[in-house]
Amino acid sequence: MNLPRQLLTAFLVIVVLTVLTGLVYPLAMTGIAQALFPGRADGSLVHDNKGNTVGSSLIGQNFAGPQYFHPRPSAAGSNGYDATSSGASNLGPTNQKLINAVAERAAAYRKENGLAADVPVPVDAVTASASGLDPDISLANADLQVARVSAARRISPDAVRALVKEHTHGRTLGIFGEPRVNVLELNMALDDVAETLQ
Image (cartoon, rainbow, N blue to C red; front, side, top):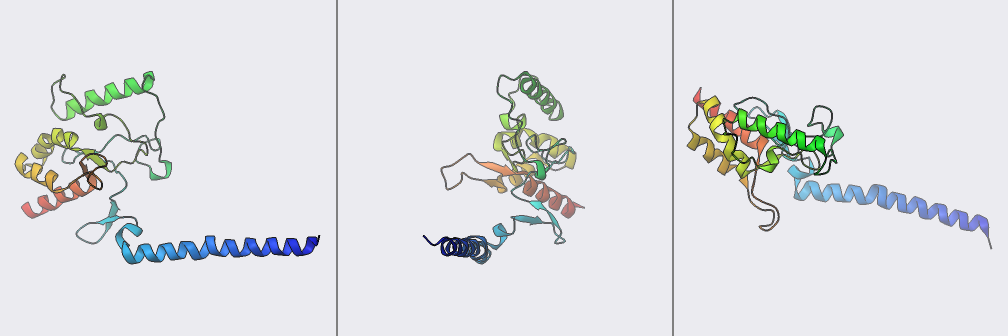
């Protein structure tokens, strides 16, 4: 048994595998991704009319004004929407803290959107997603916000609904998930419409 030779062989295997899996493979995958899907490989960044990066279509942001569609609540970070603290609250459905938070969010949602106390509120309007950074809302959630956004922007509800429809994404691969609306893209489209009306 030649211990020095075995140690040298083990060391060389580590070096070769480190180079292959730590350098060659990541560089090859990055190159392929950049060639085939450059926008996605760079983070699906969204730019405004002036070319400034305003966010990513994959990461939710907080929009609070009445003229904007509001995203799902976020449990990421102390103030929410913190991409460096992505994660859910991990509170179970019988947890009183979660029950109270959902009740408060439902009441606030109804109030800000001028809804009666008995109007059902979409679940994505009162609960955070697993990541806390979901960029999309359901069609039901968007529909209940149309009247508020329309009034705040002085745009007809039909025009706002048309923008919602234009920014609605179908089921992934036609079978997974539900149709959804990307909040950042929709709010940017609303800002573009507002600029053209000025």
